[in-house]
Image (cartoon, rainbow, N blue to C red; front, side):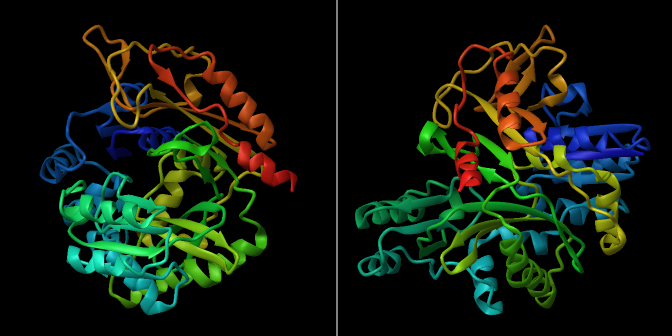
Length: 423
């Protein structure tokens, strides 16, 4: 089989490495891929949002199956276009990807169908939003409606911070058109859990849970990032919580999308908060999370391509989705200064024996064919083990063997999870 994977980050690298385990895979193209992905797939310089060029490439190269991984091309209808050419795909069509593409849509969906989430109000008028903030509970959460590279959410601790957030989104257009509409919602408290789930629109098969670390610095300080590391499983996601999530959130969400004529097929990522009142949805993502994928897929014992094709063909119920009992840890090695300003172009040294456990996020090949840094998040370094403490130790051991100038990473990935295991 000839496969096409749309995207060029650490998530896509993890997906490609897992897909390669299937013996029927002869060739994988990554559009656009990156320098590190080039070791596992043929990278083609076509942007993930260039739907016309992606479709033309897929048709010209007689692609047998495509995986559309990032949110932007999903919301732009990449799956719709490829399917119109007779190319089967993993990923939701645009009408279903809106569950991530519009926070106003997803919040209204949850309200309509009784899916537990934070109380909220939506606004497309800045003056009305500012007037609402005069009496809104503080702290509060302000979210841009559309896609914003995972950065369109601001937690405001004071009324002034909340007003500034609204103005930055709606007047200053900090997130472009994504901030033309906003959601102002209740601030929830409790441990966060990420659960990726396969669904073909009929059944839901969750993957192992995970815990992300969004803040740039140790101790959960500093700016929010795309994620500085992840561990799996998440100790707060107990069997009782999992059962409630399936009955109160996962299955009702899939049923709600069906009722709206927006059947979701692909990976539905549930961002959850385990509150004193039970689990509630913080957000939906219409695709594999990043860097959650980098700890979830290494624990997957079932064949990924088999599961993906079962989702596409509506056969998920009869297909085994199995994960190991161990644990995984992924430490993100970033460029110093991320997520604001950072330098690029530093050569990356990865020992050959640990290369299989490293996922490239922001790398490129220079004129001499050397791997160099090209982004804020550069590498995801992963390890699996029988228990979380050992997985963390192994991951940091591998980090210590990798070198590039300007390298920066957190030293406490998994510490909260270990503390929760002790309780």
